[in-house]
Image 1 (cartoon, rainbow, N blue to C red):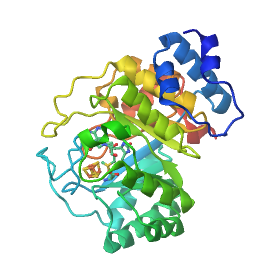
Image 2 (image 1 turned 60 degrees about the vertical axis):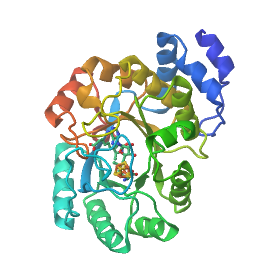
Image 3 (image 1 turned 45 degrees about the horizontal axis):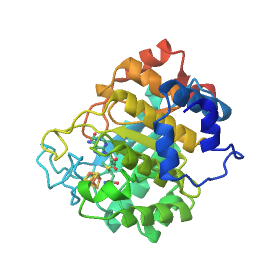
Length: 331
Ligand code: SAM
Ligand code: DTB
Ligand code: SF4
C-alpha cells in the first residue's frame, strides 16, 4: 500500500474530531511499508506538536506488591512469585520528597502508582494529601490506583489531580488470557467515571504479550474510538519479569513496537503518546525511531514501579544527541 492509499484508508478530518476506526483499518496501517507508515505518522505529529519536544513523567510506586489481581504481566500480583514484597504505603512526606527530586531533575509530571485492585477510604485520604502537596510544587499530577467509583473520582478531582492512568492493556478478545480477576468492562467503566469527573485520561496498553496483529490493532481501536480519546497514551513493551506467567514470552520484533507507536500517533493525533515501559531493554536507535514515529513523552527516572528504567543522565544524553528537549523547558 502506498502513501496515497493511506489517504483512502483514512480520509483527513478536522483536528480533534474523534473518528471511528475499524480494526481492519488499523490493521491496514500496521501493514503499510515501514517508511510510508513513519512518514504519515511524522506528518500528523508535526501538524500538532513540536516534533523535538518530549514530555517527562516520573513514576513512583506509593504502594508496592501484594496486589489481589492476577494480571499475567505484573510482578506485583500476589498470584505470582516475582520476589516483590508486599510493602505498606509510603508516607506523604516521602512522596513529596521524591516529587521534588523528580522536579529538580527536570520532570514536569509526577505519577503515583499503587498495586491495588481499588483503593479503600483510608487509602484515598492519603492519596488526596499526596496529590495536593505534589500539585503545590507546580508539577502536573497523575495517579494510577486501580478501579474507582464516582465518589473517588470526585475526591481526586477536588484534590487537583490532573490525569488518571488506567490502561486497557490489550484488546477485549485477548484480555481473558492475561487477567481473570476483572473484566474489560470494569476497565471501561472506571475510564468513563474518570472522564465524567473532568479528569484527563491516561490510558494505553502493553504490546509483546503474545497478541497477534489483529489483537494489537484491536487495542489501538479501543483507545482511538473513545470519545474523546485519551489525552495521554502510554505504549508499554512487556517487561518480562521472572516469576510472572509471561516471563518466557517471545520478544516482540522492535520494529513492530515502533509501528505500534506510529499507529497510535496516526489514530490519536493530539494525544501525548508515551514510549513507556521497556526502554531499558531497547536500543537508542529503536527509541529514536519511536520519536520519529510520533512518541512525545517518556517515563523519566531510574525506576518504573518495580523494574528499572534508563537513568536520568543517559536519557539527557540521548535527548541531546537527538536535538530534543523537555517540553517544559521550551514551553
Ligand atoms: N494497579 C493499578 C492498575 O492495574 O491499574 C495501577 C498500577 S499497574 C502496575 C499499571 C500498569 O502498569 C498496568 O496497567 C500495566 O499496563 C503496566 N505494567 C505492569 N507490569 C508491566 C510489565 N511487566 N510490563 C509492562 N507494563 C507493565
Ligand atoms: C504505564 O502505562 N506504565 C507504567 C505506568 N503506566 C504506571 C508502569 C510500568 C510498570 C512496569 C513494570 C514495573 O516496573 O513494575
Ligand atoms: Fe495489580 Fe495493577 Fe499489577 Fe494488575 S497491573 S497485578 S492490578 S498492580
